[in-house]
Image (tube, rainbow, N blue to C red):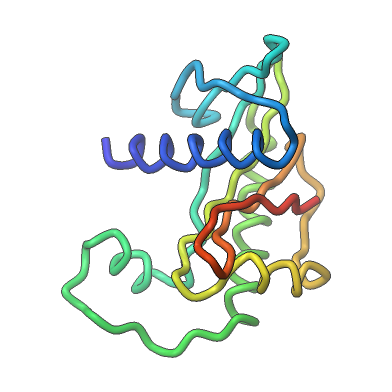
Length: 155
């Protein structure tokens, strides 16, 4: 149940940011297992969305999801965070090969870090390695320095 709620939150943010940035709207029609959601655009075209989360490490994930008594996390290094992102992209590119749908699918990666923002990722775009994959688009959903959500297209 918690997984579905987190996915719905990410999809709602994606829909809002996409409309704001590109002027085109999507509407959620179905949450399921693979891909995590189906949305339709204003013309009725379907798009699958696979949602995943970017955490620095397991400790940070547990803290942010309220599953740890720990109050502090060790020092984080942005170069390490980019390596985690690249590893996640590789893993998801392999998983994406297993999707067989009659509509395209996009990968949505929600940045969970309270430290690293959109500006950090934009400055490191040349170090983000997007492997060959089956996704129509790969999006990074992240906050900017003013805590506003936005999208970065990664491919």
